[in-house]
Length: 368
Image 1 (cartoon, rainbow, N blue to C red):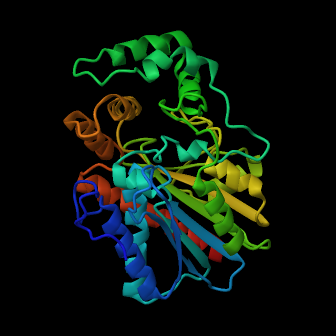
Image 2 (image 1 turned 30 degrees about the vertical axis):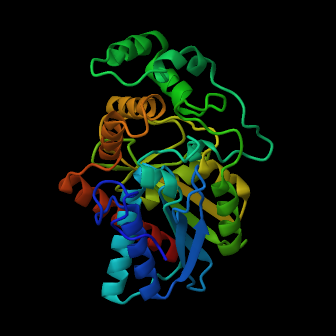
Image 3 (image 1 turned 180 degrees about the vertical axis):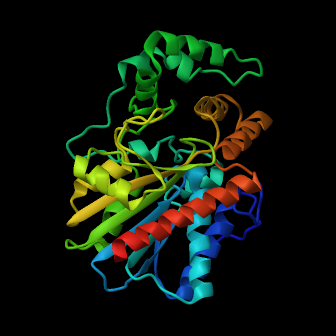
């Protein structure tokens, strides 16, 4: 039995879209009413406590050679947006009494610990979108510029009210250039466990779980489109489709044709994009699970890139350098939640609506 929505472990806003347990219960209820095959995988937390954290999923078998995968919550605190899109779509299916014409696999809250605790990372500070390394890769290394700037990226002190970091950042951009700086900071590092974008010292349970799930539901002759829902990157209020692995020019043209109303950004080519090491999308692409696997990271922009970075930086400092029950830790965690899932009803309605449009378009492409 899942924890009640009023659990004291849940984030602020119990009973709302931010609440992991309530969103999960709603997802389970909707997929059960639709008669979809349930998927449920337990994820332990760092204290070994029984928090009933699970990756939930649901599968609809349309006996088609095409499959749509929609996933959310890989970066825990970003989970509410993806969950809202999935549950809005499920409610619409119930209301319209229709079923998708292709197979559908939904994956809800891939990083439940991060959602529950209001962090992008898992319980070991691993950025899961830097953790999906290929078998021949090792969980080692730090970009040279990241190591040089560790003092700035991860100060070993609590966040300060008066912080000159934006001025320092401006000087660093002038010295190194924006793109090289972003690439070095965000691509992933594997030796500073208290640092931002830490990919871990080994694979997280999600790597094994995702491999098993995809092997189970994706057939060799399938055509797959995978929409992985995120927030925080891109123009505020707009959704961007990002391909985070190399593709052919013909494939790029096809994507622009499929999604003519959306901005499609190829790997590390956008003004605020970068190439991540150990990304889930690149890992999925190289698994060669089926005839044709198209992975798209769907990013819902929230605030400016500097605000997103400095909020992440401050929350990470508060997490490691303030007491667990510190009001300042709670304050910066609240700011992180706002940064990745704004409370503005206008933003939420617009972002969810655009997410549904992209999902509908994906279904049209696969069923056409």
